[in-house]
Amino acid sequence: MALHLSAEVADALAASRPVVALESTIISHGLPRPRNLDAAREFEGILRERGVTPATIAVLDGVPQIGLDDDGVRRIAEEDLAKASVRDLPILAARGGSGATTVAATAHLAAAAGIRVFATGGLGGVHRGASETFDESADLPTLAETPITVVSAGVKSVLDIGATLERLETLSVPVIGYGTRAFPAFWLRESGHELDWQVDGADEVAAVMAARDELGSRAGIIVAADAAGVRGKAVTPFLLGYIVDASGGRSLEINLDLARNNVRVAADIAAAWVQRRTA
Ligand code: PSU
Ligand code: MN
Image (tube, rainbow, N blue to C red; front, side):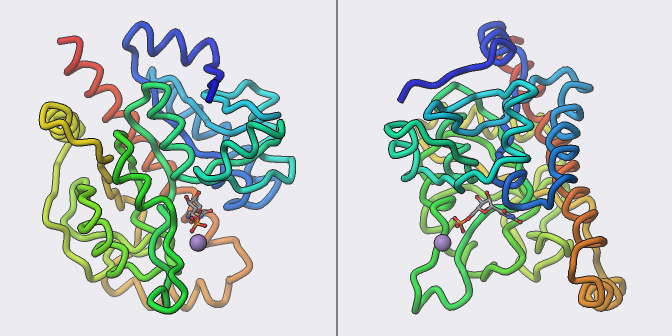
């Protein structure tokens, strides 16, 4: 599939400068208008401030875009775009259609363009009741065969976290806590699931990425970051507050905080990766 790289992303990759991929489904389907447009610009701004080139990914008029211009960012925020996972990409391409890419589709396209680090909010995973419905996001099997490091605040809060972690184990996708051994439950810092591995900085993640390459693995790496979450005795008041305010407000701001933090962590990892490779 022909990809279109924005000039700044193509230049950054050619010059071995750090690049971080960003997904568009969180903008199109995960955040309300008009706040989503500010958020899309803000995520890009956080990267630029750190000297990292943002590559927001979407399919526009049949062409997978790796890096969007101002008009492209506006389109993913304002148009009613299809939610596009990996299986939808050839259909959109053949028909000249447009779509906002999920974690799976973003990871697939970013890796095809040579991008190694990706920041999102929460991953898809195994839905509750999946033993009956088989509803498991394509995010999981895609990360089993897509060499990219994804920074997330765990998985979407409505999912079966234990089952998702079991599937990631089966699929041989490393899951590493960033400064924590507790797998976050999106809004909450602790899901009750302990991870096997913790790293305490971006250099350590870059070292794992390098070792992954040397070992010939094709799997992605999930880095779980939790900085904005709620823990301990704050959990119950938080949940009550959330139930009172289920229309948005507080949960929206926490969603944004989590995503911002993931973008910052991804920026550090992308910089550490480039430094390691060019050292
Ligand atoms: N997490 C959220 N909001 C979202 C998503 C994840 O809190 O909108 C999106 C991501 O793009 C993820 C996708 O890849 O949902 C997974 O959807 P599905 O379960 O249909 O594969
Ligand atoms: Mn599904």
